[in-house]
Length: 230
Length: 291
Image 1 (spheres, one colour):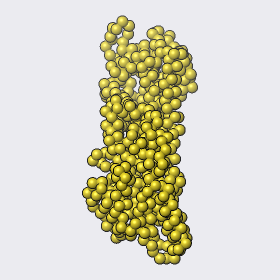
Image 2 (tube, helix red, strand yellow):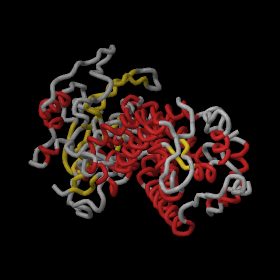
Image 3 (cartoon, one colour):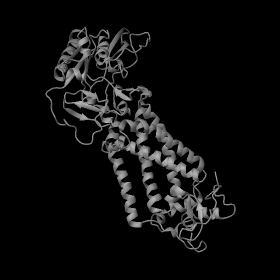
Image 4 (spheres, one colour):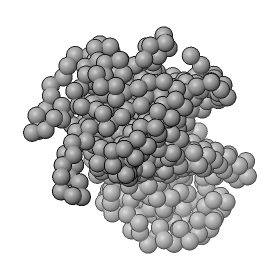
């Protein structure tokens, strides 16, 4: 993994340097997860409600959707596990997170001046990450049960019912997180969306949203992937 | 034939509310079944399936359960009675054609499972997506998956024969007359008459008719020597219901989930209207923010 270094200054009308926030590998991983999740979301919603079954038609019909849903679900699981490998350390809940969480009202109301500083990821991002991480584990286990439902013997049919329940509950939970994640990454926190595509943010952006991380990467070695946010 | 119920369908079924004069029904009198398996052969013959390998387990049992291409199977059970004697119970197992079918309730694919106005529950493989939800919905473990075509299959109650005025193939082949076919009303009368006869003339005090109310009654009913112990007849459930998980999943959960998803989208939209995007502070690091 390459280090978070300050890139060469870029003049795009605004003064100042740009900082590498996501490496190429992190960006690719994010979009593998995003696309596979959206596919599972579209097809899953089609299986969820007759009023949304038309979504399956968009991606090639119900039978095609049913064929690919578990496979892309596996790909999504793999990408989340890969993400976990890369970000596990950065995603641990820290003391600044606890302070930030107490002041979350200011964050929601865009009163960011009154927020305690955060590391590479803020508390909300961490919650979303862990929601998806544990969500995908539940979706994987219950999904395998739904995939091979006939292999669950009749005498243990409660497992069939449990698989349905867990899959639905976990999917709805991840959808809740997903709605907020997409909203914040595109509309609410400007610059976040380009950062997950091109990898860079402005120094002002880094200072505003992730001050502790900004201080860390601009100071000394610039190796932000070692203990960020503590 | 008009369709009374249709799976995974947005809006009413084409034949919803249509009342037909009669429901069709198969009557299986387990007390006169000799376990000859002619019904199994007839089922394969009519529906065009090859024989599959049988499994020998020191009993008359051809194979443990029905398969996607073996829809009709006699279940044998050497049942030890309370007096220590053995009775060989034989029950023809197949789709029960429930009035309230769990498979149809669970199915997400538009028109993959239909219930005709005469009560026959039929899979429409061209609409089936092979998800297997019907397996979870069925209280009798009937729908089976064909891995080659990725479609579900089960007994059709010979809907093709019945709609031409013929009786199902299994009924036609039965040599003892333990299988009957007709209207639900007639079959229930016949079954009750037979159960009464068993109770009064043959000493089967617990004889009775199996037509479980939990699934709204079935299109296949049984006369049993001991109606208090249907489980002894190859695992016939005593009080079958559509699993409550399936009911909840296809009912309240749908609305709770949909409202939550809509609420989420509405919530973030309103948040944007009220607060809009976050601003990036361009002030110098030493005096920006109070943190």
